[in-house]
Length: 211
Image (cartoon, rainbow, N blue to C red; front, side, top):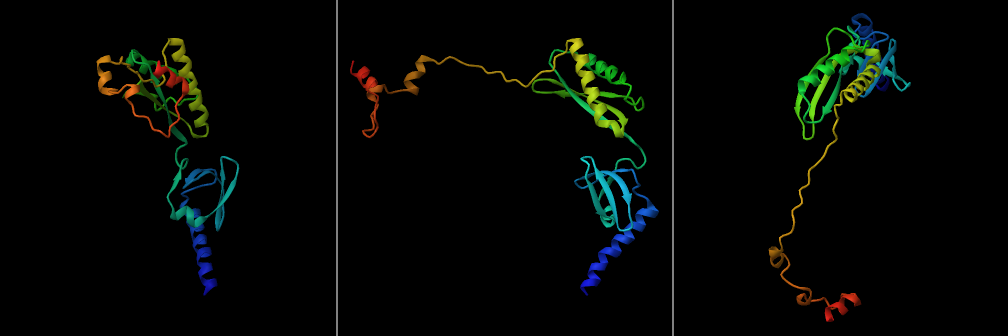
C-alpha cells in the first residue's frame, strides 16, 4: 500500500512531463516565475525539470508543480518587456517641459525599443514634489541594465536643465511663549512647590532659594 501511494507521485510527474512535451507551455530557454522561484529553464525531463536561477543555483522542480501551480512564462511568445522609471521634481517646474524632456531623453537611448514609444505621464502632486513616470519597452534579457541607463540619462538631463530633484521636507513653525499664559501653565513658584522629603536637592539650588 505504501509503495502504491509513493508511485502515485512518480506517475503524476511522468504524466505532467508528457503534457509539457506535447502542449509546450514552457520550453528550454524560457524565463519563468513559479512562486518565489525565478530563472531560466535549462532542461525538461521526463519526471522533473531544471531551473537555473539568476544567482547561479540550479533547482530541480517536479513536473507536476509546473502544470498544477500558477506559473508565469516571461518569454513564451514575446521577449519585449515594459520598464518604468519614477521621477520627482521640485514644485515650480513646468510639467509640460518635464514630460517633453522625459520623452526626448528616453527616446534617445538606442537600447530602448522604438515601438511602443516611450510614454511619460504626470502622476500628481506629492507632499514635496511633482511626481512623474516614464514607461518604455526593452528586450527582456537586458531589462534591468537598460532601466539603470535610462535613470542615469534622466539624471544627467535634469542636471543640465537645472531641474532639481527634491528631498522630503517638513516646515516647522515655532511660536513664542506668551508670558500671560505662564500663571496658567506654571501657577506655582519654586518656593510654593512642596518638596518630597525623600528627594535630595542640589545645595546650590537651596542656597539660591535662601538668598
